[in-house]
Length: 184
Image 1 (spheres, rainbow, N blue to C red):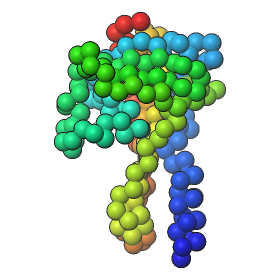
Image 2: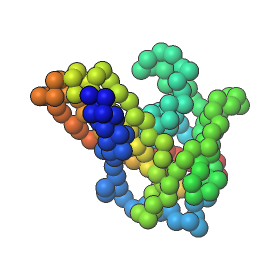
Image 3: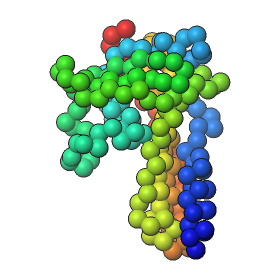
Image 4: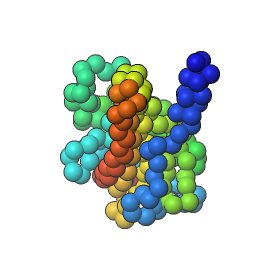
């Protein structure tokens, strides 16, 4: 039984469920222009439905210290995000609230041939007991810059839930957001 559980965990951790088979739009990045991502961005998307801090938090759990359930992001809505590419494998993210530094970390990224910069740190979450009464979730993110130099983010969210293996459901959702660049 232990070998079966271990095999399941190895397969589960190596499975790439929330993949980006066909990212929407065309990525604009290559090795020579990665610095175009450098700048300060508004935290709230142009549609007003998503914040950039939520994107990074879901992938890296950077705001684990905040309490308050679903409304924990209300405490940090008016922050600024400063992105700076270090190299084609690292992106520095700073989150500043009224000149107070809340977060400063170099995140792992990967530049792919499709012109998108992929956040390598994906959030893997287990809910309940998988296959018995629960499942797992994976979120991944990729970035590019549009013609107006705004940050475009694509999120893929995969989740699987089951009750006694008999009833199982797996879904992948895709979301697209644009965050306005405020300072070059």
